[in-house]
Image (cartoon, rainbow, N blue to C red; front, side, top):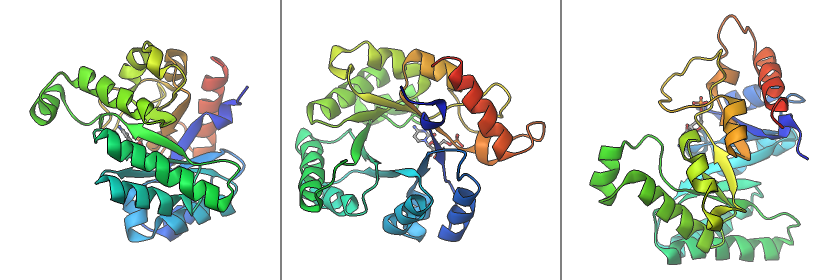
Length: 246
Ligand code: C5P
């Protein structure tokens, strides 16, 4: 059984590698997983970001959100796997051929590197920032139906994990095809934290109870409210809340 401290990624949403290293330093011994994203990797690089995380003993999730033609998807996934992240994302609103190319890129790289643990590919079925109206405009259909379709395509292509908002966990979990998929859920807010720009959120305990395997939590930890006081205290409380439902 996983421990509560292994159930969430802390989002390292900063602009430079030096800031990222400082933030990661403050998390050593408190958490085990971090997530790095486009802002940091565009300024620095995926390789540097992964190395900074691994040097500090963290498992790392690269939120790459790849979306391109199959050949580029395969080559980019092959290239990213050279850095040996534990997880990375691709947009799953893409062709089946492109999603299968990602699987191939990782598998080939892992074989070449003789990796014991391959990076887990996380499909982003639908960006949670997209409203039902925008979804209809972009995809020409019901947002949740489209999210389910893209999630199913990801599972068919052999991707191990999916990102979804707390609201969709139940829907995803009810699909036999998605039974074994790892569900990663951002939009998590403890009762004591500010919502910031998250519209649809759940507490850590609610998200785990609904069936999320892993959570992504950023600002409640990196910018805790003054009554909580410190990142350390915020993490302690979140771990306590998760422990109650494990
Ligand atoms: O600070 P906060 O907890 O809102 O950070 C959530 C993290 O999860 C951010 O890095 C954000 O980009 C990411 N994320 C999200 N919603 C998604 C996908 C990723 O909030 N649908």
